[in-house]
Length: 235
Image (cartoon, rainbow, N blue to C red):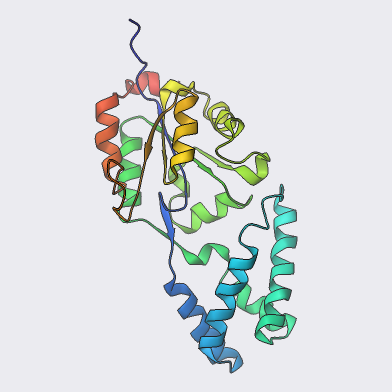
């Protein structure tokens, strides 16, 4: 029986895997808007959250950074109407609290990624997200640790479509059995396994039995699979 090749890379989802949305930023933004524009902070916070909930899946068709920029300009104008702000005021709010400002790295994210890189592994991110993935990873303080970052919007194929994984594998220059994939959605994990990747579900809330419950557990999973020698991993 042919043995599986050792790992040469770990491919992560972004949201609820290496990063999370901090709802406290809505309160911070609301207080800033209240102080800056004389608004009711409760109305601002509720309005911002309602705006995102309504538009949260209206960006899947965006393919380029220019298209994303136009989307956020339109988004800002809609927010102006919702909050009774001028377009200039809404643009100020959006500039002060852009999309990435609501993200935080999960606990020990940088330490875990540094540890994986120290073992000779390449690191990638495959996320169903907007083209600005490099900017968000930089904001999280993780961008310098990521070798390949794939935003499915830019590719035009979203997880769990097999094409999204194949694109990430091609970008990494590796075959499926050489890569471990970590995601918080079971359907994405199942799709990765069907293509031959090692894959594990992560649930940072600790509610799903048999899932990883912290990013730090990835290191143990890597140990069980086995890592390529530094020379081989660097090919």
